[in-house]
Length: 184
Image 1 (cartoon, one colour):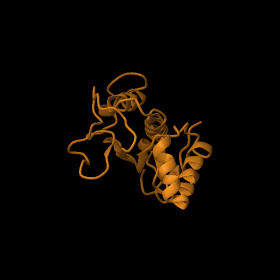
Image 2: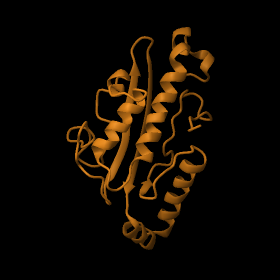
Image 3: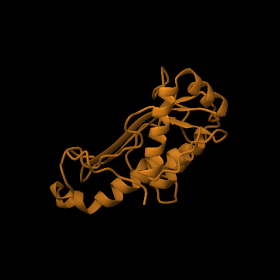
């Protein structure tokens, strides 16, 4: 987003592209999460993001000025060795720690938007293990899943365990933390 309080604070040029830019980006975040299922590949996620941004066609990642890959594993992976690239055959597996993390940028007029969230991929066995080890932690995870499903309308797979207190949240206007994007 931009550090403003409401859409009227944007320049006329920014207002013309705002709807498409913010909402298409958020639609790609929705596609990212909804397709993050055990058995899919990291290349599948890349393709969903690319085609959502490209309105059904490849090339959306470039069109939206995303110069790094759409997300990465958590820990030492970061951007340098991310499996989230075109044609990656790396399967999504239980136990992966992932960062949904990519910034879209429009140069003229300048606008940027960003969502960054950590989550763990967990099959039923791992979910039960987490629940047994730390019931209060799992309750927080379930509350985050509920928020993503019921407020943001994201069809979140059971195996995605959000770790952030603002999972999937996109503030289009950074000075207004009461306005977030959600799936229609």
